[in-house]
Amino acid sequence: MIIFDTEAYLYRAAFAATVDVEWGPDDWTTLCRHGVAKEAFVDLITKDVEAIRSKIKTSYRSGMSNVAMAFGARDCFRRYEYPDYKQNRKDSRRPSGWPALVQWVYDSTEDWFVIQHIGVEADDVMGIYSGPGRVVASSDKDMLTVPGLHFRDGALVEVSLEEADRAFFCQVLTGDATDGYPGCPGVGAVTAARILQGLSTPAEMWQAVLAQFKKKGLTEADAIAQARCAYILRPGDYDLALERPILWTPPV
Image (cartoon, rainbow, N blue to C red; front, side, top):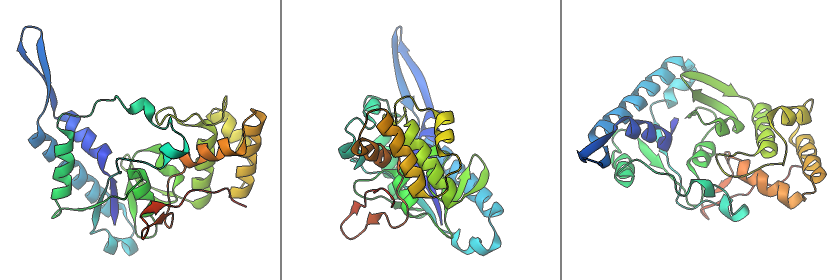
């Protein structure tokens, strides 16, 4: 199965189909031509599906006939863990007619199927359904915290469990300005890599991360809140029966 970061692809297609229209002197509007956007979206998906199938090992190809569109829910559990999570995005502008484009993806079930779960983002949906025989198609660096096979910028990349864990703990330390959570104050990517250097198990990495937070006068609860913002759910991290995520807890 190939799982797409749907909103990212749909944004690309929609903005490529967006034009400014002058109705009169000093009278402008922005117009998104949905017909053009839909064609562009299908072209992007088709191109990448073909690229993935051409690169995939023969043993995986039987599962590559299924194409899934991952969508996030309106509400996200991370906002309860850290209220400022993504608050910097609340006023960001979406392409014109965005709800109609999303509904079109939902309705086009002859070409793909849609996956969405209560309380989680599209990244989490991709992570939950990642694993053997699955490919995650996304250029978002956050997805590198999830082990498995990834399609990024035209290349097929396999992320090991240790690589994914290291990327995750680096993200806890550095935070993410785009997503609106700060991580550990004063820690950048170079410092984070140095802090985690030579450590291989999640428990070792967590203790190093926690020690850094405490050096800054912060508590374990502060560190856990940042970790839950940074952690993309993996297989088994969502209770399908109760429809709720299983929150990340420190490794022991």
